[in-house]
Image (cartoon, rainbow over all chains, first blue to last red; front, side):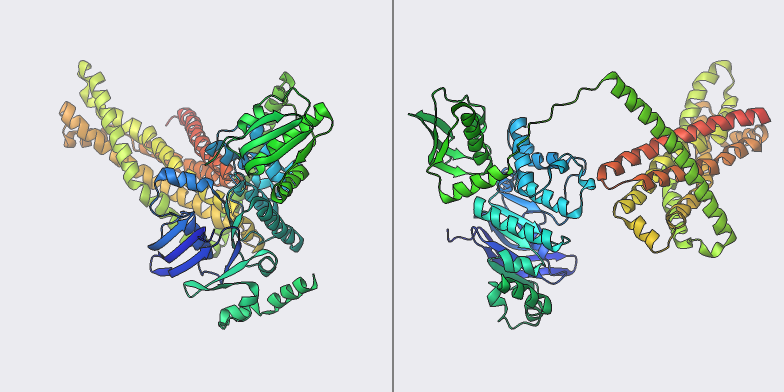
Length: 257
Length: 368
């Protein structure tokens, strides 16, 4: 249990001459919700893409479930992919499939399940993320941004993964929708024992559900810790972020509850 | 490691064993219900449980309730109870909808909708053409508003960059014409007429027609894809809110570039076709280039060349307008982009050939 479920050591990613990460280390423990924050262009999404194997870093070691991502065979990689789910910023639903077909897609491609079972399970997943029944047969382009995010989340958890990667899950949602999404993540974590890797800007999300926060700055993980730890970090960006007016508002709101 | 889930009935209790995971529950879901009355489902020996497994358990419970009225789930851990509760909340209550059968009336309805849709599209294209022509006219009155940079960029894209493929194509067509002509004309001793054959067919018809087809496939599709992806990412809407006219900014530079460059490409194709034909005539029939040239100059009317070239701007207008129009029709999804790009190419090639036929009739009546 003490072994981290994701461990990144000495990650270096570069695009041309621009270095995004330079010797980045991060550990994610089993069953926790970790929130990754950082200014624009600090490579939060790049880190996520590197961990799930969508881009090859220039150097460094990434291990998920104790397996190195860089040098697994294709077959092992498919097995690994089954054990995690990824939700992209705008849902990244397949635009030629209906919402329900989108959720069924991973079940159809990776598992051998009867169509009836598949339909029942995908409908449950869609209701779990709070999509109304009449949205199931719609095409992604007919959904609002918030609904697309929910559908994207439903696809990410379609196979009951052990880790879900969420890229800005609450960005662009109204406060009520965002709070409901936070509650949903926390609820599913409790029920399914998920580990959640969360890239976010939403201070409310960080307050409400994140066990630990990792701050990306200066091309590495500057500091990790709980929300309370962040108040005491002596770094201008961290101070500005966690002690700014918005952060205080979020904190006050939490204390009031 | 993982053990397949299975159900055994002990007394009035269904004992579940094994891991209830998404890829393993198939057997449990399709298994027959126990015959004996069952009043409890025991989860003591359940290993791992995910949402699919919980769904299978609730399904079992529901079907048992239908038979035995009262069924209880026992020995569930707190986590399992939470999961079951979440699942219960999200299970569907209504029955699956019955798939609808298509009747003759439905098919008729589809045909009607398709016909109306096609005619509306025809009207829309005419409207779009009017809009483009009106915008071009406005820009001619106010030349300061023409987007020269954009236009020259597109002239390079559709014109200069297409020169290699167009000249190679025309050269090969010239070679083929000479070769085929030679085999047909040689038995009659009429080899020299191969020059007329190549000159007339190349200059009058093939040079410009085949160029237009290549350009439709090359640039028409590019227009649709470029404008379509801008439409998809709401760039076109953003332009409108900034007070920019998408027709003036996106469509006119492309259409004008095409109208200016297609005749040039046509001339290049004509030259390349004649060179290919002359080369093949020389090799196959021994018609020397100087003889070819003399024969070409003395026997072929300059109007043959003119007839071909007159058509070029019209073909360009068709390709440009269809390409941009289809791009503007793209909606929010990637599939419509692909579909409309192929529609754009097919439609513009079809319209080019159809208008070529109209031109043939026109020139026949005029007597050129």
